[in-house]
Image (cartoon, rainbow, N blue to C red; front, side):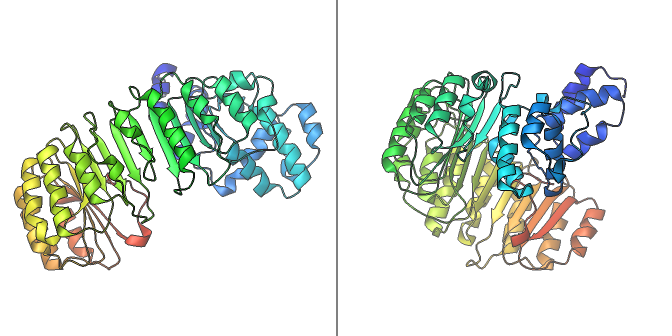
Length: 466
């Protein structure tokens, strides 16, 4: 395998996202090392551990010219940085994260004057005509005017992902507008004040905008938000993914006729009316995710889709039994192709879950939130899951402050016997006797399981099992 040609190696390494695994490939031979280095250095800021920040800073500093090093002067952190690196690591960087650069410098170099000099020289190293980026991140303003760097327009011309604050400096925004015309993914953080209306022009000049992510932490600045949302309508035929953290100020979402993925709300329990989304039609929608969005609004959205929804994730939000029943009915009447589902099931609507399982035969993963105010009939729930689940369904998650009795779990596992071994995750603040699960794992009824206290949840996505 060590003799695979570089094209094959490159394709393999492109599928690996774990830095530890990629780093181990460096030691196989020279061909592997040369092929994996660009992958490791594409985004050096990702998953950067605190203890490695000084090491990264040293490597970056080793790429500075002698003139730049002299401008900075000596510093004890940089004593080992004068050795010439084996590779031109900086040339492989495709993610320019100005916030991380500034943070790492400020947290590791105490001398403020020295810190500013180092920052200026490092930004000159990263922003010039010899660099080429696909991702750009900037959420703070800098004293360093990157728009004046020679070659800034060229090195930013290939940016396809832009994440920034809407209050960035006019000069920098102008340079981004001039240079970046191929942005496919745009993530904006709307500030409380000093929002820059120049973003309208930046949005207008994009050729094919696919993904929009608007993080808004307040309902202030309605005027700016309306202008910004209306400018996005120009891209109504190309936008396929939209994420917004607060209720929109307009009905701009109605123009996205090809929208495939919609994410609404944020984790903070700030419940407001989202009736601006009522009666909107999303014929191409495949994925719907929500947090702190009223159930009535979500039910309306689901009813106005075209049967293509394959994934629905609804985080906990307080609602009554009638709204819960209407939501479940909307899902099994309009989403027969659904594969992954997360929602709260009220105890009195347990029979509606049975209808859902019968109608939705493609369901592969089910995440059930248990309401503590219900007296959960776990036996009835497990009976329905074992009796009415299709052969495709074998992945389960349960989120509950309470836990089923061991007899109930035993009943669930015994009735699952003969089916595809299940993947099971339980999130609770109660302690469970894991011996019973281990027993059924040994018997091949449970393939894998995970148990976590709810405040120490593993870093899994809702529809990720191990």
